[in-house]
Length: 182
Image (cartoon, rainbow, N blue to C red; front, side):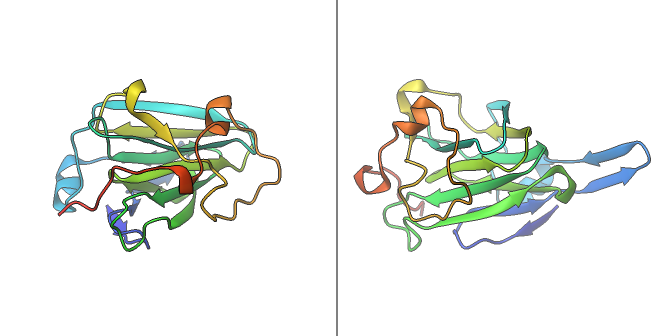
């Protein structure tokens, strides 16, 4: 597995081994020994997937302590603009975001440690995102930041949002408990 650094310390782009032939493709999205070699968490507790229509924005989501988690995401159908926001208050990149286009053909996934909010914009009619997380969903710790409140230039005029995502506080109003781990 190839790992690519990002502008946000701790967030990694991973190029998973991918193979294709006349039948289709195969991608190995997780291999414990390789993740351990890279210093990434391997203690996944839940896995799930979402389907989204074009122009759907999901995010910016995270869980607060004690249910915080690292996350591994891949796009397994369609194409998305994946966005990660640093919400660690003592980080040099606090409040900064990065994005990457994900699609099945490029074999790229994103490893997101604790202390980051995550979301994406579906760029196709049906995008499917696959997630692995290191904690079980805890509704009482489930939080979000308003998708349009942290200076990121989303390439969509009128996104489709859930009522929950429409109600998230702006970045400037959120009091983050996250710090850089020592």
